[in-house]
View 1: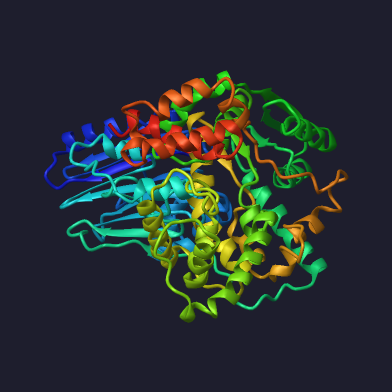
View 2: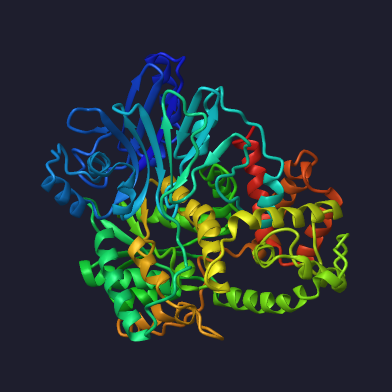
Length: 620
């Protein structure tokens, strides 16, 4: 586990390339406090910061093949590296280390760009092939590890964190004019977009092959995409539960591979209980960690009950509004670009707590997107989309919407003229304009532009699948999971110098999920994750229907109480960055509605506050 960075600049000397790279690596020292490694020649430099997890003595990078013609810098873990290493040894490859990093070098030698179909893990890497004079950049199947890149003529740079690219004088800081409106509506941006026009995120499941002689026309290619198009063949509930049980056990066992202590991030929900139950069964005594905020919605009580049930050595921490105020600047800096999920605060603090005891944490991300865990959301969206299908039959007879007034008639005509994909994306908005019946914070012109953006984005982020629920699941997996939840998880855990692993996000677990009919994920009326609950019913004694919370930060209580002043000062100051995009009177009205209780906009206000701090500190 580490952070990587590199650059191609034909005009630079080895010394200049090394100096630029060193500045980039210094900015991500938190990702790898155990040391650094770099390779610099005229025109090219690759480097990494290392958090030592496997082969503590021998896993330093770059790692090269036998004749040092192929080298790699790598961020992540390859969980099936022992099996791959065995096969590669049998094929005649010679290893110098015991690390999973070296497996990637020889796997590329053996299989070339087809290597990805062999991998089970999380990764972002840069592989230099001097035989073919090419550089290969890659990001893992689900997007657990981020990778940013920027091109400018004959120059290119890449890094695990965007701030590294901004350290280079030739990387443009020009903003994408649609980035803020999209962010404040959906609270994150889909790949490959960032808030900077010329800086991109490599999409999950993609690689970018760059011929060093001329890489201008090279574009990313998908090597894997989660699809729910084939007819389900795992339709019996008991058989499905047995297959899932075996695959989860295998995945957790691989995710426990490490040469350092491993713990579990424990909330009160089903996903973390799933992971910790298998981990405890496979490894014996585990250490578990949680944070809470007091009150009835706190995770600490449910997490403590699970810890007692499975017998883990449990650690808990209660957090306050003062902790939040002291942390939000650090959250914004580590995120690189704003992601409006307030649980980032809880993840950062629980990782800091865990780092005092372990170096690796297991968590339960991915279950909701694979097995339809957001049952209330999905059932509501399915019902709305079905009703809109009836309206769409009359679209040729209805006038196209021409304004932004939130009248019932306007809403009905908008739905009638929307495609299913566009409406599905519109239903996923979590920020402004908020409630479609009473939109807040946006001018009529901005609301019209948002409708247009919804139509534009839906054509690329909503993929046809075998049924509507499957389309909603893949939308969430491609966007919310990859570019919000996993970004938050990676940046906050790495900010605490700890490795966060997600055993449910394994390609073989995903294969099981893809073979299930939607009825085994979300039956009519719920509950979600139906097959997973059936799988665990024999394993966990405690009830499986505890409400899903997900480290709920009490933003409303804090933003109307102890943090009201700092937040109001940030958002409504004369030089507030968000006021370059929003009308002051409309923002003030939204603020007043929030304070009076007329609008539940705490999450949106958090996203605006984060944007404000990010704009001041990172994007100056």
